[in-house]
Length: 302
Image (cartoon, rainbow, N blue to C red; front, top):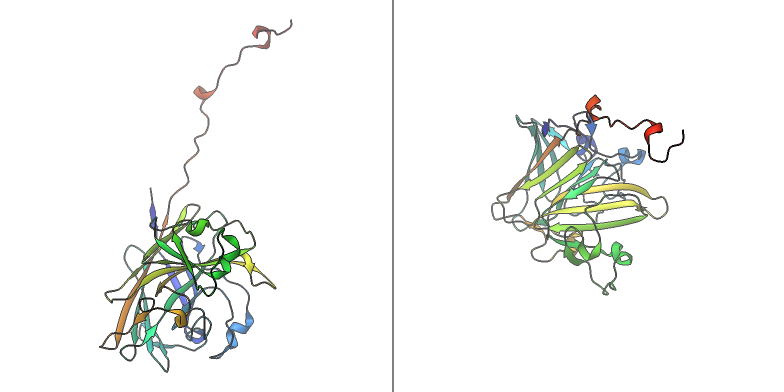
């Protein structure tokens, strides 16, 4: 019997609105690493990876790296965390429904026609046995750091190649371990729903909007392959608006665009469930098989 696990989240408005905890059923889902420099960053500083969930907007890769929200203080306004950026205002409100699911509602205000990417850059604390579930056949863009892992040559000046989930270009990206020294970035395009299962626990992330914007899921599967000088393991499962990592590489349909009224809204729902392990029945007396006494076995000596 599947049990729904109530989730709670903690955010840090002073440090980029970062989610520092996503917890339920005695389990912390967000991975963290020690990174003291994260507490003193300023806009324009190089990205400091402390784990958790970062709000990446208006780009993910590119300039500025991981966007321009993670390095700025947010403000608390009633039940919302608010980022007042020179180019936009982003409001985020968290609530939990009666079933225990956590919902993050977003509202971005900007000039009509403003283009951006957004990702809930969630780094998850999962074991090497964890796996991802998404619609089979989803068109999945794979990026150049995976060039040495595929059989075909990577064409010059090609920002990404496309295959199909769960093994685009022959890479089984639904599997999240064991560590093999690789790091792969991919984007499941036109995908708004993905689950990660680790042992008895499943975390499901679902993105919804009424706006005409591309919905995707970014995957960062770093199995102790990045950075080169001091690699570590980190697993990013990142619902996003857009279909590329770098806004500078976004084609016409690869980024979100603010409509004529200057407002764009979307929602991320996160649910957790647990499936109990099968109960192992203790042996019953009737399960025992009576063996013949050695004197009565064929070939046994007297």
